[in-house]
Length: 345
Length: 257
Image 1 (spheres, rainbow over the protein chains, first blue to last red):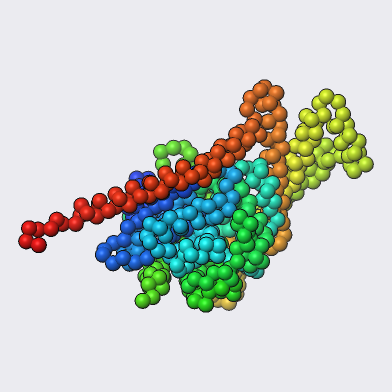
Image 2 (tube, rainbow over the protein chains, first blue to last red):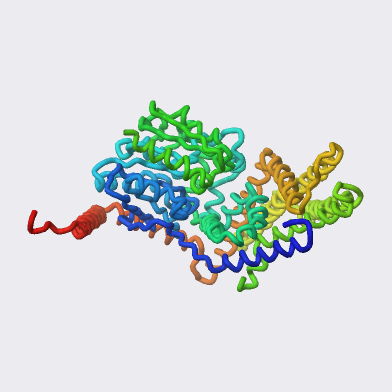
């Protein structure tokens, strides 16, 4: 976009060229790294195994992603893949694929997701690999990982939380402020499983000018950069490839964590057991994004004040929520730091 | 873009909305690169459009308060509530009354949110006008390209929007709209269920009941000892396969070894 009609035409021509190319670009939502499914743990919930590269055999890593989006953001391309980087460092990687909840899954609670499915996965993995896994929890999956470590400590070796909220009542948490007045029980009773058609607009509405305007105004700039355009299309698919949220678990997360701040207030219970952060004594690496508009830095950093571990370390990444997974800088600096932390000796 | 749908996608609507920045760009050019009469006129025109929409919205909200749209006055309400509980059609009357009330609440909540969003757009434009004027006063550079002007518009609009987003007023309005939406959906579901039930067709309630039974059955099967045994066997088979695969890739021992 420039000043003259000629350059405007040029912008439009580049837009057309970008759209022409984009129309034919394949997007594989399974991710870039080959895997095999090694178990099914619930309705549509599977465990993927990504074997390590090379002879060196490091401890297994269990990646627990959020229920809100699909995990292929962690494996977008070979160059921007946390999973590939872990494989390259010698770790067998296991990833929980939560799948797409169907109608009858509306009754699944966090007790089921964490207390049954995740806990069983961690136990099976320990048996399969003959040792407890290092667990990497991402965003909401980080909350799941913390609960796992607190309630089933023997099933976790080391713990990494990526952009994970712990304190849901920090001053700059816009999403939390908006959640305070919602009647989650009423909403899920009416909507059943919460469709992405309802949820995506809420997330987009936190940054509408960037996500609905600037992102597409910039699109023509990619006309002559096919790899960047391909990445753009992958991201575009990822952003809106959102599973429905199982009604009961969604309401429980909104009420117990966003409204009651259950991790900090020690009111969050699974199967009748309080999830106590001070029961976590594993080595913990807490990664937060300094410009995160979904999980503000304070919300993530609060873990340090509540966790029982004496081997707690936190790393601030200079970027936004997604930058932690996909930015070049993250793959240059942060991912190697994580693999190094997982292998201290 | 093979289908007509692509031409009406959300992002194209946003692109068209940002096209109005081009209008301001033309005005800035007409003013000689620094904001003057043409820019002022463009800003007034935009503010006028927003004011017009706000007026329409507020009029619609006021109309919701006219007798034919409002719930009955408090002195009348108990009588109507009682009437709705009399006679053979009392269930239908009560459902209809609940649907009317929830629809009114939804429209009010929607209007309240829309009003705040429009105010944020208005504030964003005021900020942009002020920023251009301040830059001109201090002899600072004006945007040299349409793209630069677009970036300024984006920054100021976003700042105004985010200021709105962080207020308790917005959080309350958003919460009211979410709750009113689920309430009105629930009331429609009740109406639909009543109609389907009359025709002896499966209702939503029936369907949820069936889903509940399916979920319980699935959980029972999942937790049964037989299922756990099968899972253990599967895992063992997978491990054996891995071992076989590893053996196949290992070169056979030569005769000399």
